[in-house]
Image (cartoon, rainbow, N blue to C red; front, top):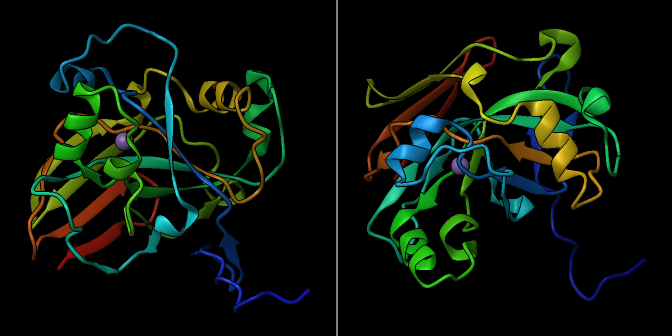
Length: 228
Ligand code: MN
């Protein structure tokens, strides 16, 4: 097959213990999945069905990246999240089988242009420009399930310039990983290469040029990035 111009490079993440890369297919994100974060965003933490948004696959960037402060915002926010990597196709996946579809786990940042998101909420407009901008999904290296098992509990933290900004435990998620996979697969056929950002604990806040971010989920490799 020939193309009218050179094919785009496939966005990919490193995997621990191998030279092989994980090719990213799609990025899905869960909105408001920790009750204290819902309260800080002005919502009521009732167990309404989870809602989803997405980012383009090439929004991923790797551990150690320098990320340019994005255009069109004065309020770039950090959201540290556990990220699930899908390794097996599936549609309408039952909760009891959901974990069989997981390839592994990593730590990610759902970078958000909060001012644009607030405007979109007010005007009932889509979140794409607030959430799906270039380099808005930095991720650490992936750990395979064989190595770390399935993560159900463990501290999730974000430090900015050495100070703790976000802290929680992934056991506090309103919707668990199997539930998220099951519900999301009712909307989309999940494919190997999909990433799912599972929501952020409380403490989201603004970032500035020069900030050094270190995100961590217990058992996983830290994510470090710098805003430039
Ligand atoms: Mn988020």
